[in-house]
Image 1 (cartoon, rainbow, N blue to C red):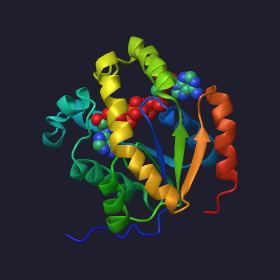
Image 2 (cartoon, protein in one colour):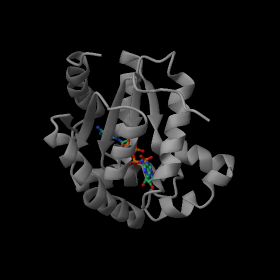
Image 3 (tube, protein in one colour):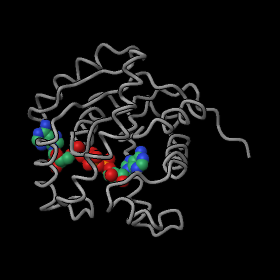
Image 4 (cartoon, rainbow, N blue to C red):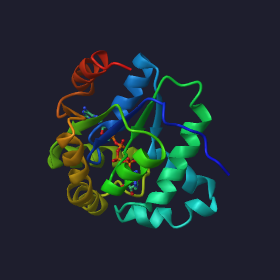
Length: 196
Ligand code: B4P
């Protein structure tokens, strides 16, 4: 069956290491700018929770700090974008692309993003934040061993994606070591200067 043409939707990719503050900042962006927030991590956890066939085996992969298969993530994104394409001002795609192929396939099948928002944080800070969240999150991947592996996945597989979009002048880098309020000041500068 033919899929909806999504080439004219506004998309901003939001990337950064695990615990870099993507989800935290996206909530604020939604509040101020009215975008639709789609977190690939949240979509995958919802899939696991719902016990769908597609959600099977995902827990193990996430528990290891590895990336789930591209097809699953892209299909979830397509479905969710399609559902709101006509009513939404734009989409924040949080946690995506995490590997080069995800970026390529999304551009081929959906659209080219307006920009790539990158939260730049040291490994130390990300580890501290995630260990803090571990006390209440109940997430299978918020533990010391998985955090190490998630950081490795980020450096090995996601950094090349950021380099690629940097070369195309599409990356808006936000230093994100400081408090969520201070980081959001920087984020607002980016959004206020973006033409949509
Ligand atoms: P995600 O759910 O994306 O998890 P994450 O990288 O930890 O980011 P999150 O948004 O949750 O954390 P945030 O930085 O906001 O991914 C989990 C797993 O799902 C992946 O490892 C992978 O297996 C799979 N997956 C997801 N997307 C995929 C894809 N595209 N392809 C394949 N697999 C995929 O916040 C972290 C903590 O820091 C919070 O406690 C927060 O309160 C705190 N914090 C945030 N900002 C702060 C600040 N400025 N100061 C102090 N604390 C702050």
